[in-house]
Image (cartoon, rainbow, N blue to C red; front, side, top):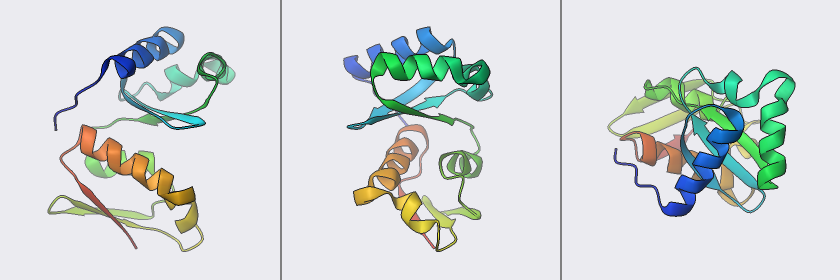
Length: 134
């Protein structure tokens, strides 16, 4: 795992950290959304009391923001990214996520956007490279 941040990501993360007061490890910006991975145990700090901090950050970035809490345990990290997961197993660098059929479309997202975000964070922050949905 070797995370390389470009200048834009560094500035975005610094701005997010200034607004929320928590440490962010990585971010991905999509057309209308931003995804931030925050340090372990800092989810509440990022959201703030009654969601004040996250609403301020959304106003500043003019995008909807989703926060994911990092944990060094890969199974728990995948469950933080995909709360709909019923079971997560990891073998030979591949993550297998068991889902209810009703949650499958939500996890994949429109044009595969959500699952691409999960894959990107996994490749940035862990040694895992592939995802299979069951």
